[in-house]
Image 1 (cartoon, helix red, strand yellow):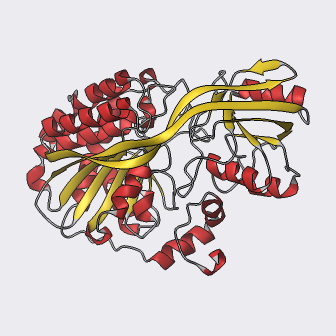
Image 2: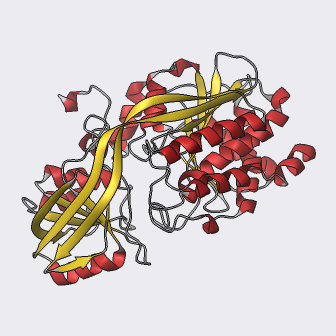
Length: 440
């Protein structure tokens, strides 16, 4: 065991690829930069020893940022447009709805207003309320504009897409503002008219997924995944350059241990994740779910030193993570609940076993992610390599023929979504894929 660990812990492969990705610049879905990132990742996987490295293209909704503004009483405040916001200008009274929890929307009169909500949730709340859920509660309740206020200090307006799978461009203009600008708006302009304007180029585009593989030519396979796209305002080091760097690092480590693989491992670096899981959705729609043994989706790794794995109620995945932690006497935190965000979800929603691999944090929400501050200096090479050792071992373990990971039924996933209070949010954002009585 010591030989492969020592080789991996002195590797530069993943970190060098991370630097390559952040130096590209804009990796927005459908952009030339995203295409370059995919091509560089394909080449890195091939160099790491994976076979059949190639790109698979698909159509997506393009959105290119123009100017944006928020103005009140002739005072213009700093803001950025949320991707897939429509190009539009509105003026209406500002309503500060605080955290923007579902019950707060129910209790407020928002018809014809511009709604402002925070990017976090209170400590007492039992689930995360996603940005898109808050946006569509605002739409449903008659708002004409949406302001997304960061909860992290530092004059950092947050980004993040709106839109639904059926209607990828949102219904009302949406901007992000910093915590400090949000405080000014709430203090000075509550119930006063504010103007929001968004300019954007909106036209069809193409994105692509990167595929490569290792191990025996079995029909069944383990997917090791990430996404190569990033928001256009920053380097995208944490979200999700680090995840794609991890996939490349794991490809090299597993190539060295290919004789230990008893099930095929397919590496997939998805495109267009940040605008609605488009690349992974395309993959899920065009491949057999029965052939996927499990997914190891890396989105949020390296931000902290300790791995955190959402296991979606799959007991075997929970046990495998704990076994790896015990073998290495190294902590791995597990979360058995469902997590319907990131590229595992287009598969897990149909019962395919999957991990969402992240790293632990005391912060609520994304921290530096989705802001100008998502830069390489926030990450440590040591954390990448330590986590790669654990994930290499975990992948080999779940690829063993003796490890059976039963898929869940659609009914089981629906029951879990309902019991964990996630169904309402998925319905309002257009992400509910099931035909159930509540949807008639």
